[in-house]
Image 1 (spheres, rainbow, N blue to C red):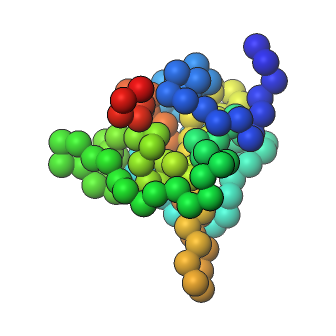
Image 2: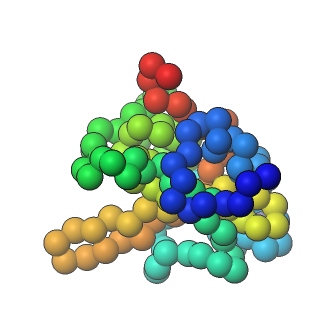
Length: 132
Ligand SMILES: [Zn+2]
């Protein structure tokens, strides 16, 4: 398998291939983030390894449109991971180096604050962009 490149943009198929549906292991058990959870700062090695990004580097201002289904909302643990919707279109992709459970992270930057957020990836919720 090719080396991981944190700058590589992943599509739905690549995302499925890189993360497992593990519910967690001893290494990553402390991370509970079915919806977007605030974390003190971006999490990285040795806890998580970077595997790629969902961001289109040529798109300087990804949209803020959210995609939902079945009454889900932004924080809902069953909200679809819609790769072309906010905030997934600006998220980086990580995984547990032991069990390959996947995680997304993005940083919300307002005028006077930054907020780091983490969400575990349930592969069943991954949605490819419409029309692909
Ligand atoms: Zn793990």
